[in-house]
Length: 89
Image 1 (cartoon, rainbow, N blue to C red):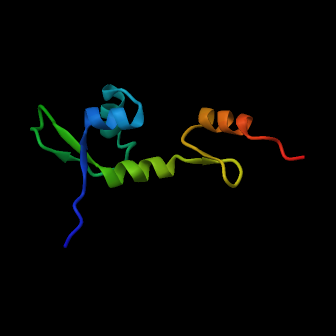
Image 2: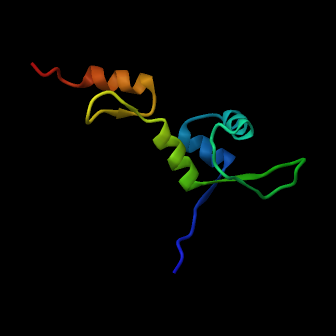
């Protein structure tokens, strides 16, 4: 049996990534997301679907590592996590 890929709309992707719909559209059009999208609409009125594997790859590429055991999706999240970690003496 073949695995089935899950696809998300722009609105669903925006919710998953905590971004706006407009930001997702801009990143898709600029190629920043770097994923193959499926257009269910027309060229003049696109209705994109983004694969879950593409979203996961995009997130994995943007992870920030400070020290072993501390991962974050952004520098701000990394700073918060690092500040919350107890300092080893």
